[in-house]
Image (cartoon, rainbow, N blue to C red; front, side, top):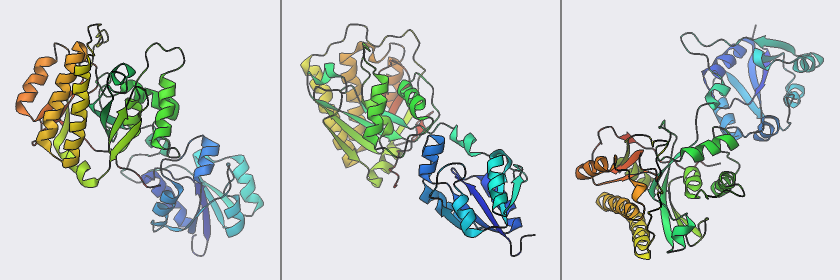
Length: 383
């Protein structure tokens, strides 16, 4: 079996894993393997979502496998999109996994004289069983670091124009209610699933998230920087002037700056915010001098990052914490305040992430931080 014989298989092969490799190795026993690869458009039409890996990327990876003879992206959509390759290559066998079998596929193959073979899912010896659906269920929604915040709120930017500074992060396992935009991440999960769409720009995605978080009649408007920060790559400065949406956006995606940031910034947890904790207790003070103080430190923070000056960034982080506390007494809880003070004595700069009174701290340091978690800045992906 196999010598001089030909095989056609069909699928999307998204998130290529050991289960795919094992399946294709088994197909190779029957003969020379051709793959009818499901297109991005087919995935969107039939599954309602774009693949995580583009058709070009999936084709490249499959063609790199020794067992695969050729890969052709099907121009058709639907469960029988492989028909064009079936008619074109006239294989001896059409092979499919048992969970992909349908009577319709079998009838098509038999009508075109291709022997229809159904294989059982069998992981390679010593390896765990894998599936794309299992990988897809993993949380791939990004995180964000709130370096300087608040100016996405009109009550602040109407007093004085200002900027927020954010850093987009690759997804990491973090506690909920800890200043890491968990409610906005849940909105993303509800709207898009466990991964951001690749067929929309960062701002398009953020506008969808913002609209979903703020339906008509909602008394409190959730700011835009969580949505923008979560979907943006690299480091971003969002500039506000009396509106919820920024008037302009500055970005840093220079590799040397991102690597420098990763080396000098870590996050450390205090504890999740208690359910009954109220950040805004009614004693807030948005005097123009205080708002201008935060606006000034935002500009200084951006300059420090651009210069890759860790000491200056640490000083800006401390000043941001102090400026926010001066306006909003609940910004740091009485329980967490001594923790931040002790950390500030040991490192270049420390502030709470988000405005929850508790949660994770951003720490700027030249050295590893005890209990610190290194971060990975999200890089843009070429499409």
